[in-house]
Length: 631
Image (tube, rainbow, N blue to C red):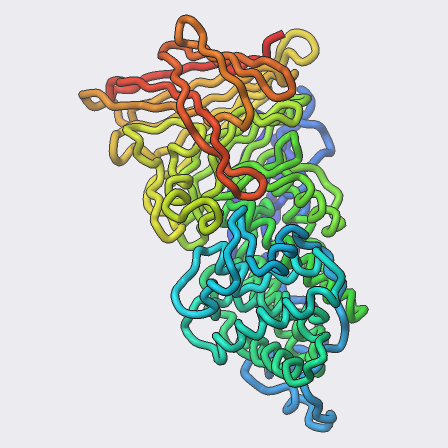
């Protein structure tokens, strides 16, 4: 992929690479992981001529790229500690490693200050006898704590004990301990030993153990000594189970959750030094497999990005509780994870709807970023993370310019390639439906399946087929495998007269229709205009005969009033802030249809969409459109 000023090429191991880069006035900046990691490395070469022309600001490197030099190798320890770590890895018990230590019952050595408060409303619902999930109240008495699978978000809430943060946030501890002990007691009774039920998926076990350790005062402060011993025994046996089974995780993020919990248990349980060494090495290695070169998780899911950051923030709080310094890799990886997350935030500070995510509110994102302690800028563009960001004064354009995640990494994967979102001055104008990961709340499971489809995104579909197959288990099938992308600045007259031009194409419809979808977006630097062109280009030398049905969808943000133009080619949009925008189609009628959008709580909200429908020849066609702010 080439564009003016930037070439992405395989990194060379040749010692003369720097000299070769200098010969064509380029600066080579290595990316990726250390040499001992198996992932490929790339290098970015900034053309000095482009710097001279003002296309690239000299000395400025995108945050994720500068930090991609992070070392993902295990923390440096002494020879004796390496031996202890190796012995523990092969099953030697802590007591065997230290036979002269006094034997004691399981106990916690410190209390952790929770760095990420929960939702008080959800905690209040718990005290009233309900789990609150994406707007739905599920009676605790009716929840199955064992047996068949629940909807994934409810499963993570119940078996991962994420509700402990909410309970802690809603009232003083003495008012909450009885509720926590009652729910924990029901769960322990339903799950007396590890088995093949969802409760013992590695991801759920990792979150559960970590939450038990961080919120120990809620579940261990009661007067019932027998219950307290039962809970402590559950903590110890769960940690021991994770030691043996963390490598069987269902995906890489679940494995990271397991290693995080193992490390936290090593820090907070007595005689845990060997487990801590074992956990730290496994955690850094698993993070290296989870995170791409530019800091985005390989599932390309903002929700998974948030989960990875939350795990590390909570683990760092465990280190603080025992007054220990975390490995330097933890802070470095946190600094690597934050810029891509910032890149998918809108002008209102909330989350964009990519890969099943909903419009998570700005307050929660802000709290998470503050907890990391990382101060950085959004990652404007990313090679693997794939989301392009254009900030044009008060407007934000977000564009999915990469293939969907491969099936083994996908969680609630969505066929969103070449979709975009656009917001201005805190108002979302063009959105994706989102909410595919919110099944089990007010969004039914079957509806969540549709929210992952191409039609639920602001892009083009052919005959309403998905550009990538959407499977029922949250995974993705065949479809888009290649995306060609180009980004450049376009000069203009006067301040704000320039623009940023994004061009991308994907091959998701080549196998079925022999057509490549190419999209061009041009955003003015003053943020008042977005031009688009969608092209269907024959993949071979000549197109096939016949016609196909093409639909362009532009899902609208909430509370936008619409007025249809007289000629049917235009629609006026009145935003809640009083501003007026106009959408114009270059050739076909624009129809207003119903749609929905997953709000900040993951609840479905009725909205509308602008739809352009046409029958076009299989030899290809071009559609142009314009979104412009009215003076």
